[in-house]
Image 1 (cartoon, rainbow, N blue to C red):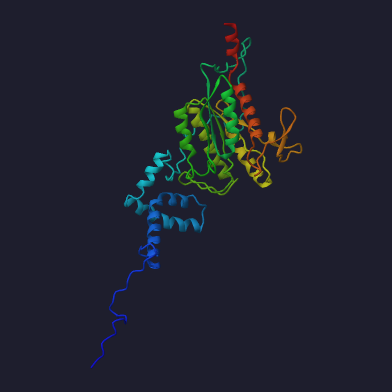
Image 2: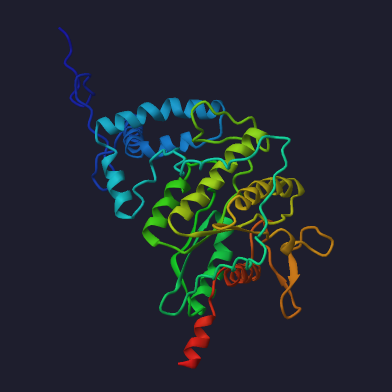
Length: 373
């Protein structure tokens, strides 16, 4: 006769009791925790897929970028199909950054004007002189601004414009005839090479239309000393930084920005790139400055180039972190990174800009009229 199992012996068919913690809550298994973590990662990736895809697009060319695009592209498509990108879009719109995830590479600039008519090569170019007894042409009167009709000034550009920009705005606030509009629109790690990172061409066109500035102070190029460009016209390639093809395309973009501002009724003051601690970087900045200066010279009535290189060079012509101010005191004008400006340097640039404004416009005759009335 078979023996009966002991009552206290464990039964093979008896269900295992769930593990519980000291507080009586059921404890999950490691596999369950891993599954939850993976699911959270997938959902999080789908919710932020547009931003991940743009970050991948913005990488420098190479296999890492190719792999990142191959992964984030389908992920962004699935996120859109499941409407999981909507919450992120709503949050971005609520904080005024609805275009953050948009990959926009369009270089929107006015079409190039008609080329000037020139005589065939080999024929002398002569200008007709004034007729005998004729009066010399009168110098065009400067546009006058008054406390009732203030000069509207907007400052924009990459990170190099931020410190000088605030100095310029402070000077504008102190002037009875200059009004700062739009504040200082400085964007770190942006420029004209990569509209996919931030599209300055659209931004400038929109702000010129909205703010109606009389003068736009710009500073670009600090992040443009590279070979890779996005937004190239169809069929156009760039061989590398500083090559003829690079200079041509970068000049087209610089000139296009100047033309956008001019067509909106404004004058461009373009701050040149400064000397830096790195000789190699300074050499690259020199090349960019040459392109900008050339484009400004093509547009003497609507664009002005302000050289900052010589103003921030030391007595030996090299990089200087400290310079003398107007009182003869040595002050720190450059930041520790050897590129950006300290406040004293920003004040120097602000005075340079104000000098140019007084040369281009009549900002003082209103005082005489006010005194005589």
